[in-house]
Image (tube, rainbow, N blue to C red):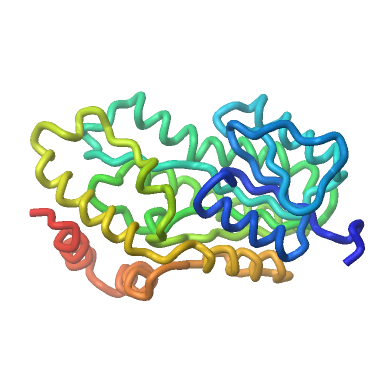
Length: 276
């Protein structure tokens, strides 16, 4: 493929896990990929091949705009943007401080918003492009002791629904990927609310987190997400939601959530996470 025709991709949070897997996959398939990390080394003066890492802290508007400007200065366009950067906090809603909750929302929701606002003027002017936000099955179904993480992903889901309608007249396609449990660095990087290990919820919290960690560490590696991402950005008009993960999780979120009475569904989720 002629270099001038290769699509330019920006993926946030590409130093590990889902972001790294997606960045390496697309680079291997011939895309011009820029992955972001909070601590990336400076780029060489001449554009190289494959995957290029650049610095971006999604909690800083100045950092986001500087990184986007760098890509545009080198490439002149942005064809695909993947909002992946983020992390999760565990703890009862009552035990999670306002400061901890704000930090979670700042990374997962406002970080995504900052990137969208930085890249969309260019994509609108181009009249083309794909914007893919990495959400979570936790953005459709909340589970015990992940309330603030789910809140951040529910917010991403709602914003993305609006973006899809707002950007359609400009030719920009918008989609969500909603992963289930995969074996990545997410487990090791999970933060815990400072008050979570003591108090009224402590025993239930420990049991639930043990189930979460077992599911995550027993999950597949995230190549399936990378392949799904490629199919989305190759589609002229991809659908909005893409559940990716174990069959049981996809069935619970995609089917049982819709057909079971809420009380039954809650009982099923609480029982699975050994609550009550």
